Image (cartoon, rainbow, N blue to C red):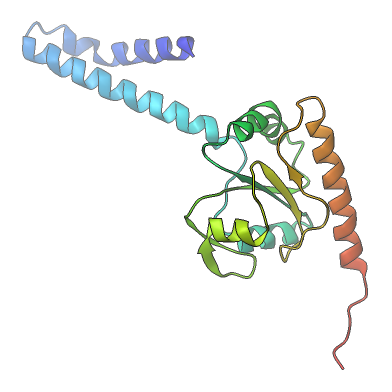
Length: 194
């Protein structure tokens, strides 16, 4: 972190060295304001890009389901809260590294933040995320749901963050079970309406 800060500071200094060479007090004040502004932009940009490489968030589950269906993938819906320390640990320890390394490439993994913002559910209806979370009977975060294209649960959900040592195996087991259920659902004969 400090190396990044130092290199950003050196970059900012190099951009404004010609301005400082003028000896007026006004130019030095302008230099300081510009330097702080550019440094702020660099720091904010770096912090935003840190999350950009992680799990994609969604506000449109119908679209997530279409994307998953077009790739023949199941939907893994990761429900989180902004103030959830267990979610932060799970992401840092397991989810972000697995997602960034491609270990979750064979599923459509999306994050839904539990709040009052509006989301589009699997039926395409707009509703608060908190209402959709209630519809699934979710009471704590983190919770992972392993879903089919209509939002149906294919296997047992994972609730909480039990152990760094075992959590990845729990996730893999649930994904394998859900994939099998999705495959069986896609090969089951369709009922005809009489």
